[in-house]
Amino acid sequence: MGTTTRQRTGTPATLVLERAGVPFTVHPYHHDSSAPSFGLEAARALGVVPTRVFKTLLAEVDDELVVAVVPVSGSLDLKSLARAASGKRAVMAATSQAERATGYVVGGISPFGQRRRLPTIVDESAYGYPTVFVSAGRRGLDVEITPADLIRLTGAKTATIGRTS
Figure 1: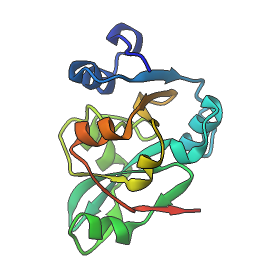
Figure 2: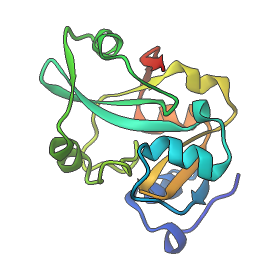
Figure 3: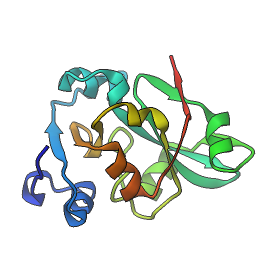
């Protein structure tokens, strides 16, 4: 893995990674706006198993926003997320709410460089790989990073919050 420069990527997410001095690799790919799943599209385009590519979702847990990072091969288990966030009830955040809170558009929400730092929970399956892929802050651009750096830089907790499809 190498480090990229802001001139090549230009997203708040990659800026955070550069400033932190962590190794990461940027992976651009052609985004097809008609793709039914942004995450599965990324996995196919990058030639990576879908369990290694993670999507960033926002949910409300007891009326507070929480970031959930789960493999694109499955879905978010809202009950497990609520438990992991020490809450009782979780529902998906509205698209407009997610975009407003993060500063990113859906399909390009990165766990890094969001407008405000939100509690984050990463599915523990991330530890099964030396590196994982997450959005770099726009559709058609992912970053590859170690799970440890993903968790450390987001201040995340880990828990089993993903559900296989």
